[in-house]
Length: 246
Image 1 (cartoon, rainbow, N blue to C red):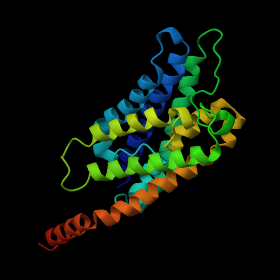
Image 2 (image 1 turned 30 degrees about the vertical axis):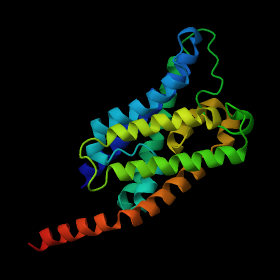
Image 3 (image 1 turned 135 degrees about the horizontal axis):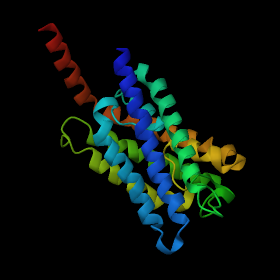
Image 4 (image 1 turned 60 degrees about the horizontal axis):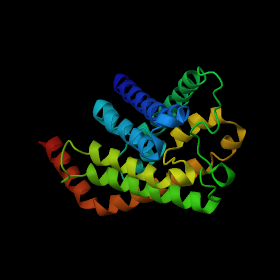
């Protein structure tokens, strides 16, 4: 049992580490070379590819959450055991912070490098497009809602088996294409926490929104999809019980 939990926690740590290093790294490091920068499209795909690759690498071990909002949304949908929630979230946050630290060490190796926002999230003056608090809150809430809606739908009974990582990765790419100008895209409290700790106190002061909005959006999606896929859950429960009795 302890070995199983250790493997799950390791998977969530490395998955979130890769998401933060790959996604935020694409944004931070490409900004140092604007002439060959990958732009909004490249950064969006970088985030999507991190989830896609790690979903297949370790998703079969932990479920491939890599995001506290996803963990809580899946818990609300009855897709994640309560005993996994806190260990997963701790591992995700640590993974994101360690990745941000390594990214800082890499980026600061360039003479004259200026961290600017260091791929952190923000609203108001810290929003890339200077969007206000309400717009940023709605964006994060709605985007995370649909992210969970897609995650749960593509991993439900009847969905194409073995292919969930593709639509999930593409969904995260689309989310970034829409919301980078608004909040620099969070939909992931751990991903927001890591860079914020290195970006400065003003970004840390706005972290609350990038915990509250994604978690609320994810849990609403979890509760809704739990109702939508209730029949699937009942069928699975009956099958498991029949096997146990047999």
